Image 1 (cartoon, rainbow, N blue to C red):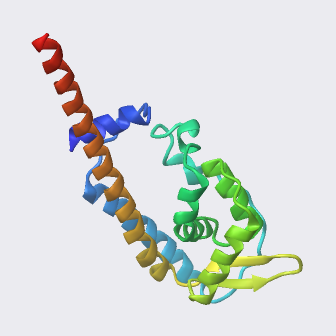
Image 2 (cartoon, rainbow, N blue to C red; image 1 turned 90 degrees about the vertical axis):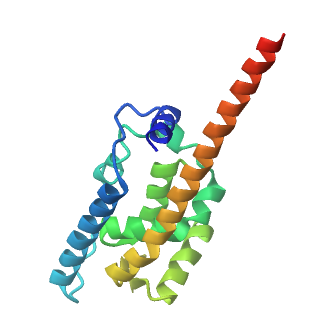
Length: 192
């Protein structure tokens, strides 16, 4: 596992040491969920006044040192759309509510991709229809908020875990394939 993390760190040009365990990640996710869920519960059913705010740098600070922006922006539109529900739910949770325009800007900022409103809004409407989001219509926009933080966490966490597992398995296979290729090259050059 350490070899895999080291190779992954080199591949994504990370400047910091990536030392974590599954329990570390689980603890962070649980603590983050509990703090968000407690804040959501304490707020009750009152709807605070919506104010448009930019996504803070804190929202992407966890990637600082792991991924440089140019690497993150190599993710193509198709990959973003494939995970769009999870991306939207997490962005809305981070913001504690957002309109579609803000979400489009956040996606552009995070992934360097310009999704059309015709791609994003149907996902937002589907999530609202499924009960994952509450939608409030204001004068010229709709504001989306997480309707149930626990259900959101239960929906997003398995998807994230699948993606991380899938990525790590693919990376491990690439490392093994590269090692075998280099070994074959050395064997062939020694035979000559």
